[in-house]
Amino acid sequence: MPLIFCPDCGTSVSDKAEKCPNCSYPIKQLVKADLNIEVIRKSSSMIWTGYVMAFLSLLFFPIFFMLFGIVFGIVNITKNEVGHGVAQIILSLIFGISGTFLGLLV
Ligand SMILES: [Zn+2]
Image 1 (cartoon, rainbow, N blue to C red):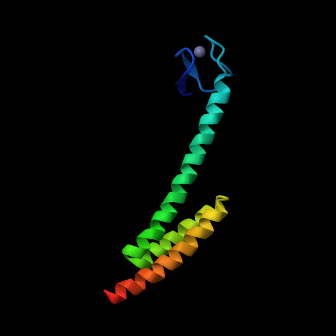
Image 2 (cartoon, rainbow, N blue to C red):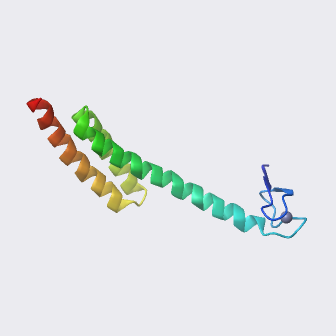
Image 3 (tube, helix red, strand yellow):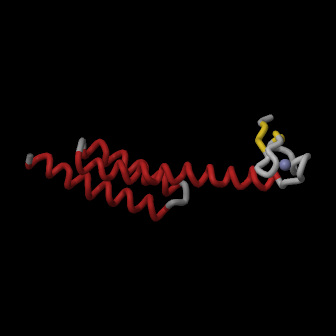
């Protein structure tokens, strides 16, 4: 089982421990908060990837990135990020279609 360091006194403690054996710091709460931050970080990186895909479709390979943008939008919707997901799908469509037209003009 993984060991973490107590933020209060620096003793190595099991992440399953209720509290630090040395100073009684509530380790369990700390681990939970860390996990929540991790989940938020992961989903926000998915959100950014979706927007990046949408913007890229304006510049390169519009159809390719438009499809990626739509896929990321759908994934974000399934992860309860409905607002971002819908925005990514719409942006991907707009940028993908304008990207295609720009490609035809150039
Ligand atoms: Zn401690």
